[in-house]
Image (cartoon, rainbow, N blue to C red; front, side):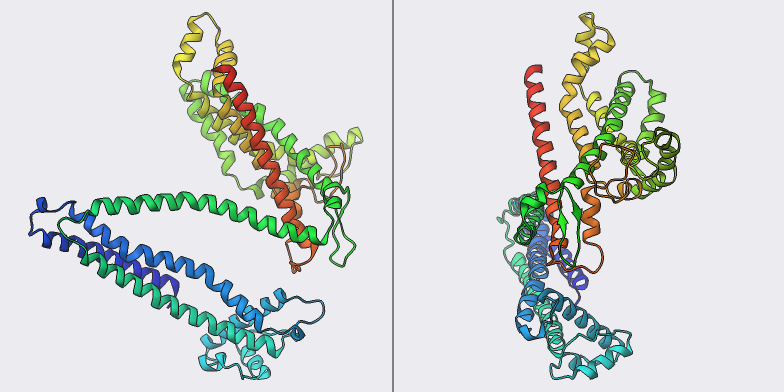
Length: 486
């Protein structure tokens, strides 16, 4: 049974449990609600939760764990002799999964029977011909061991789906029956439902933490694998970036780090003053009509896709900077440059600074403004000495969000700044960033065991550390100024 159909059945059982529980509560109360501890709806929800929540939780865990278990068991079936030179066990398992998908397609098209697709004694030539009938071609390097592993992989998936269906339906039906059986007039259904809702809220809050921990651990593990093949000293202190999947690669991060910081600095030098000053004007000086037009117009910039900004940088901004500034001053003759990407990226992140700063400034209590003006301060003095210090934590958060957005941008850099990894002070030269190289190292038919691919995870972890450092600095600034203000 497919997962969506199984989920619909479980939800249907939960819905049926709600109405059945409500009706049973009314029945045991003899029609008098005063005999019940809780309202009838709570009894219905208690049955619905028991019928659906445990079954859905087990289904989610099963879906997450089953591929790992099957991969490990099937991978153990592949002998070392079946792994050819230049290949790895992971690549062989990728072929196994592809063959298993082809077998499913062949069964769906009628070229193979389900028994034939799962028969490990089937010959490679016969299965190859049957798969060719439905447009699934196997490479010449696919061995009979890979075919047997694919057949076992497919059989394991089928057995896993069958077992999951049986367990989930048994839990749903058992929960439905148990929920109905425990309904009595004194049963505290409301307390039970509120406890279940509280546990659900706790689970939802833990998902964010678990996701962050999972992301960090995945990067850490792959980064450790990378540093097991490439010296960390050469990565962190190397000034040359020239990956070569045939060996003898130079994977120094300093040129990429320099390009990332250079582009981000130019973008922030555009976005922070423009965004902050526009927020001050809109919140403290502009009239309602002007604000109603300008604020939505600024926020429209945040909804434009980054690929559009990249094309704008490539077609318009880059040639203008080249023809009217770089070439006349002898600074370069390329339309792709750090200045091009930085200016366009700065325009893109203006709404992040402007909108958030505007909301924070408007949240400053009016009593602070009135007190400052009553003491004889001018409007500009009130803004500088009262409003901005009070709104500083929010403004710092807006700038930090804009900085994180600038550091993580890819498409504008690809089209506006180029892909050259170099260290230069000239803002009109082409450079690149860490995010661009992460994409390029993971694009195409690459070996995920090679250091040239694993370096992408090291770059990602480096970006994570940089962002964490920005957060720590921002917290220090906020606490320092907040203590002085209070």
